[in-house]
Length: 451
Ligand code: NAD
Image (cartoon, rainbow, N blue to C red):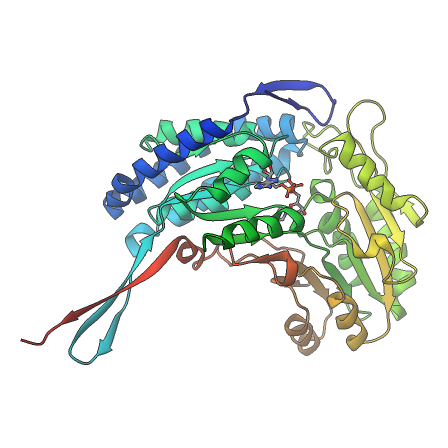
């Protein structure tokens, strides 16, 4: 059993059974057995089932959101968005089964056609920071493409994934098609990687674990998608709308208490605007409402655990603190939003993913230095560019090595568009029109027309 806690109080809220090795193998066998009939479901019927699944999730949106508030400490506003995102991603990929077309390619001597064949059993391994959306970004396109799916939630946050599996059954998904296996990474997660009947791993989590998973998949040439860590840059030029850039910067890094792979945790400010930007940022940080995540007006909740809080604090100890926001005292894993001034790009808090409400600020002189600093990291997930110069915005957008960039905005994730990392932030893309193909293999068939 894993005891799971409410991060806002530190109190236990549930005991969740841990799937063992034999249990994992049994579930993989059921998913493999269900594959043949699931891939044979007519495209229109598979689409209808996914639409019904989306509708059932929508009917339970508030319940799922409240569960996430209790299990993960997400603010109620965020948690409602997350449950709504599961619905939207299911709806979006419900359009796919009827549109998963191959090509007819001109060749001599016959007809050549391609098919996008489902892979079989797909394992989706999920981190604790966004338990619902990240599971859905894997399971929705995988199911739409005709695969059966096993989801392994993270140890501290299994409750919403387990509820989603029940809702899938309510919607009419056949047995074995969509199963959630709570349990330990080294047991259930590893078995998904090593079991030959699992044909693809869709992993989101730390770069350390992702590297190990990639090596495990390599021994079977198992397909793998990796969404890993980040240390994204928020680049602010002196010609930008500074009040807007400063007012939005806290949300770009402190949302979900900074436990966001896309967190813009490095702010690069052009030297001419450095003092003004820091002055504008201060009230925005101080006024961020860090409170009980169940409270409708809460903008930031607690960290996931005491261990995570200690880790975050270790980056602040000895660093130059510009200012901090506030946070509740007492029980729960609270940490105040903190702005650090970096002395150089060698600072540990500038280089490493902190995964907490801590942001580092560093000045730069010109465009070339901004690009060099932004790219001086092993990661490449997301980032923002603030400038009124369109040409510069486009030059920067091409030069910064990150998979998801926004100009004069901090948005990273839209389910219509591809999402994923460059360098050690990942491999492959989720969401958008192409993610579906990551859950299929192209098969080429030549039919001779010679008599
Ligand atoms: P983690 O790597 O510790 O765990 C992620 C998942 O992998 C968990 O379900 C865990 O049980 C499982 N796991 C652990 N060891 C395993 C093993 N040996 N084999 C198979 N599975 C194993 O990551 P975390 O601490 O839960 O999540 C935080 C990290 O996730 C951060 O680095 C963050 O940047 C990253 N993240 C990335 C994205 C993205 O889209 N790029 C999104 C969210 C989080």
